[in-house]
Image 1: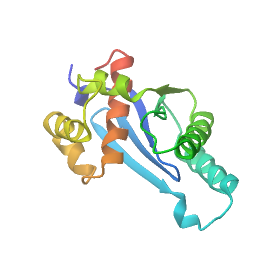
Image 2: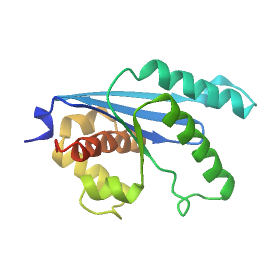
Image 3: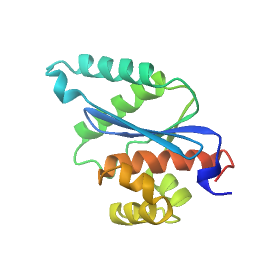
Image 4: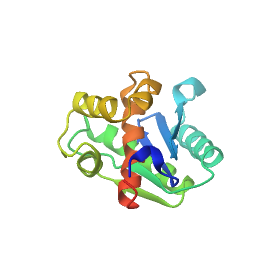
Length: 159
């Protein structure tokens, strides 16, 4: 069964230090959402995290969520990793049920290579789901969120 015939709902969340990119797949439909708290113009980290939690809670009505686990090795420094971990915590708490997924796991489950590059991930989505790739508008964060949602279908036995 191809992904387009799926009736299950799954969400994928790709995280940034001050941003969240979400993809929701239901059947052959993809909806994309993003929040960038830089626009909130706050200097308090708790306000940014609270805004993210409220946004996810308001956005997320149904289906399991698959959230990219912050990679320690990929972070530029420890503070970046800690900020990503904070964002993953608030997204996990706001989107339930949720599962943190290591980068290598969702890449292996979708693209077929746990060490796939960003270009390979984008090329895979373009080849398998050209319309969804086009919807992402070249934004790698939205591409990753879409692949995380597709990974959810693989985990649920629908992919």
